[in-house]
Length: 336
Ligand SMILES: Nc1nc2c(ncn2[C@@H]2O[C@H](COP(=O)(O)OP(=O)(O)O)[C@@H](O)[C@H]2O)c(=O)[nH]1
Ligand SMILES: [Mg+2]
Ligand SMILES: [Zn+2]
Image 1 (cartoon, helix red, strand yellow):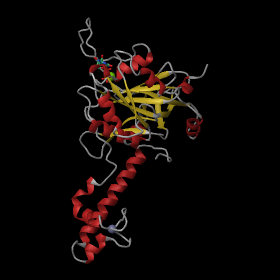
Image 2 (cartoon, protein in one colour):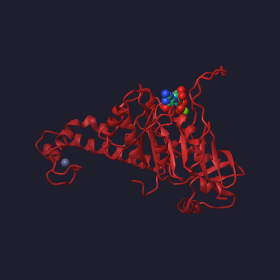
Image 3 (cartoon, helix red, strand yellow):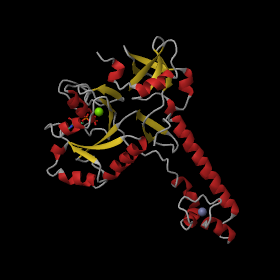
Image 4 (cartoon, protein in one colour):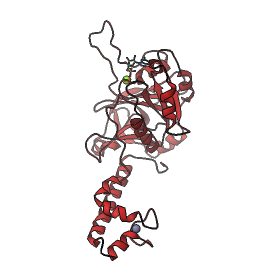
């Protein structure tokens, strides 16, 4: 019998990352679910709830364990000591503060972006999700759900395909079991996938269908259940009968891409950005480069030296901030 960790994707690469921290009482584990303040961990032998150590708690929230993470855990004390460097990280910009990130899940191979063909269908939002998938380092696949609800599903299918000639699009209907074999085909055993998308698009219904029985509550209003609507409340990883690992997530009301690109932050300097259009090099830093239109503008008195200095200072601050965010995200060195 293969051990539980191998079934969850533990391999040589994770083993060697774990070895660097191995010591008495410590074991490798994968995070299966995230709740408020506690995490469900799976080790070789058991599944249990654990909390991070104080030191891990005090680190940046984006360094805290996330579903999909490989961690070093003290199973007797149920303490998560360390999060191993992440192969991929699917993040979004948290609502509100610009610089705040939220980690949705990690070490995912494929992100299944689910959008239904009814009212939820929105190409612009889909593009934002796809940008975030590329940023995460995972492969994107679009699942067009509820195709039974419209007469001409080929229209939204073609619209999605127009976003990229190589983009994989899988139209599905859980009602008529359409497209589910195609979906199973992209779910390789041992591979980790995540379903993301708005609430109500049918993510949990897909999990149940692929699993062959109900493991996730869906939003059905059940006849004998006064509690009304059921919905996914936390992120959780499930082992599918095929051997693929599938993460279900609660819907996100809004989805904002991690603003790693900093052009907008520098928009207060649009005069400089306009001069920069004429620099010889596209990536000109306006420092030592030849044929720099920005430095020419300073020489000609069309731009003050101080203004160029404060622009460069802000640009450096933003670069440092981005580097710190990347570091806190615990990405493996070969990430992108
Ligand atoms: N017509 C139709 N309804 C679906 C389909 N898949 C899911 N639903 C319904 O959509 C609602 C939301 O589904 P759920 O799986 O909870 O969505 P989630 O919030 O993305 O997890 C439920 O009432 C499902 O029965 C489908 O393929 N066709
Ligand atoms: Mg759900
Ligand atoms: Zn320049």
